[in-house]
Image (cartoon, rainbow, N blue to C red; front, top):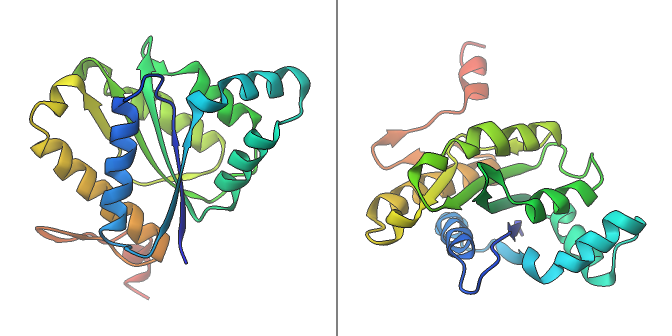
Length: 193
């Protein structure tokens, strides 16, 4: 069975960050309906993450979250945007992971913010973080501004595309877009052999 860990760093309840994480998980499960999804709300682990950074020892709750992320077949990671980057809580959680824990793991990244101006956080903050951790983010990342929630049609399309790409990476099958096929670069390289 495919397992997916969902890490969400929203601070409020309800949180648009959690809503986006749920939307991305649902889009993935529409392709992989048998996938097991476990959500990790970092707001519930904020003190544990801080104490781990100070002492080097995770609490049982934080250890369970770390084990969930490292054992999962794939990761959905969603953060709110604070000061043009990911939140400190989001970064701190990934700082307490073993640097090799996400090596080769498919990741679907997402972020939420007040305006569209912060959408570049996906490419200029999140992708470099996961590249450093040697994870493998899928091509489509999803940013949701406050305005996206008023009429979520376009957001739903972006989430659906990202979910299909992520599911394809998890199942090692090519993603099929609504308007045609998507062929991973690795398959194009092998096509002439």
